[in-house]
Length: 150
Image 1 (tube, one colour):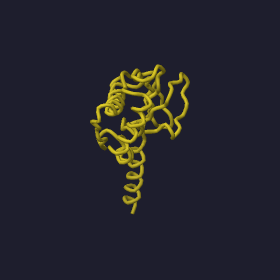
Image 2 (cartoon, rainbow, N blue to C red):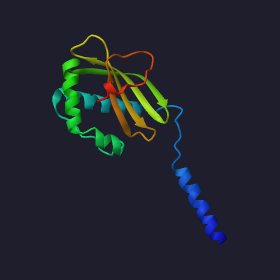
Image 3 (cartoon, rainbow, N blue to C red):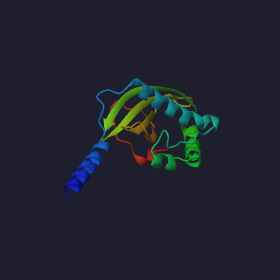
């Protein structure tokens, strides 16, 4: 009976410790480069029409399931009309908010003079779970509003 209690305690402690993620003190530059490439590829597909499916390998299952090719194509029509072709992305800030990594990019588009903001959200395990465009980049971080989500 004592062995069973010890095993139950061991498995409970083991399971609890395996779900804990640590918040990094510093973000490795490879993750910033990967987030930039991910965002650029997804938004560039708006002008090329070569939509790249998001898989569970790089994204959370929920995000991969929700951001379908059809959803992306519909959003791209609006983005193309309003902004034009994506020309450049520059990283401006990385944040950690409630166990979510947020990459903020200043975007340059062909049809407009001002810079929109593109954000990539990922888990601490570096699985993408969000991608948005905001009409204008602001120096101060502001939470996203669903009407700007693609």
